[in-house]
Image 1 (cartoon, rainbow, N blue to C red):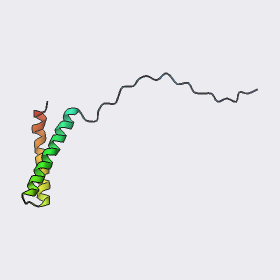
Image 2 (cartoon, helix red, strand yellow; image 1 turned 135 degrees about the vertical axis):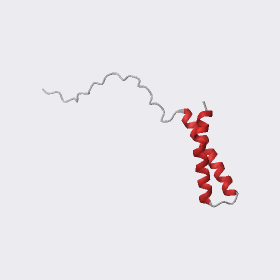
Image 3 (tube, rainbow, N blue to C red; image 1 turned 120 degrees about the vertical axis):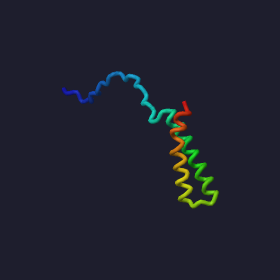
Image 4 (cartoon, one colour; image 1 turned 180 degrees about the vertical axis):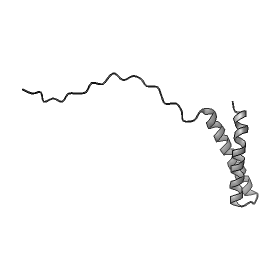
Length: 76
């Protein structure tokens, strides 16, 4: 007679795998978050001073971009 049971594939025992490395390092995350906060604060202050919305956005983006090199050297 034939065997009608399905053969179960044998899997090797699972090894604990290493976790994936983080997408961004902690240093990069802190620097980018601080730069974003600086840019938002400066953009809001510029808007409250009476500048147009486009001017406030440009001021905020400029402040965020200019603060990255400084924050990168300060945060260690």
